[in-house]
Image (tube, rainbow, N blue to C red; front, side, top):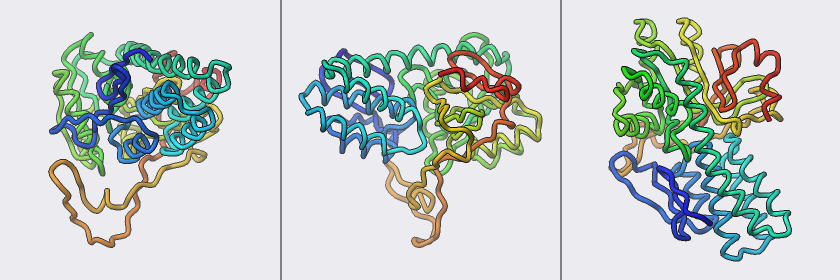
Length: 341
């Protein structure tokens, strides 16, 4: 397999490595990953995260194992195991489906390797096309609010929603970003802030519950978020807290955009209520852990509700920014999304 290098995932000289995103921004540690169990652990612990990147990481591992001589039946089982790690993120399912198809070829090793390479390279191009389309909706001087992390750490390219912001800054300049910290795992505070600082884009970090006051004060011009799965009617699942922003944006008449590659679209899912929502460990809400150690602030046996995602209804979205185009409410209501795949 050829060398493939991204910000937080790389296959180089026959070795697959994953940047530990749980330790960012203060510690940059790369994990070598050469087994299914190792990749599953990295995905579940969010050391590798972001819907596109999870699919790509799993794909590169399968290709590596194929090259190392893993039997066809074992490869099929590995694909199934990896697909089951994150039930909401549809990119992973699309990648595993492509590998299953490659596995049926006579020269399945070559087919799997070629498919994994193509998925990786394609994601870079998808990010670039999304960014160009989305940047056209951003104006110089805009204050943009975003949620979770949707940049180069979450993809092979420059990202989805954050890629749009990056491209807009390149084209227009004078962009400022409000960064939701994104409880409970702080992907905004740790990762988006890290990427914006690296890109030299001005930003201000806020707690999630501060967004409403900013909107009421007229300090938010647009909201741009990513997605982990988009139903054919335009409803979409994204990091929990996204729905809150959509409701607030609707009340305050602020444009609300969702940015995703077509690989995030699930035409077999009719609406948001059909999307399975992953429930995560209660410990993530009772306290916080990281390179600094563990801090627990809640009673140890406190009951916790901890969905990884929530679902935003299509009626709250101003437009959907895909690599194939920008689609408004009327177009989506007429079923345009079901024609994109």
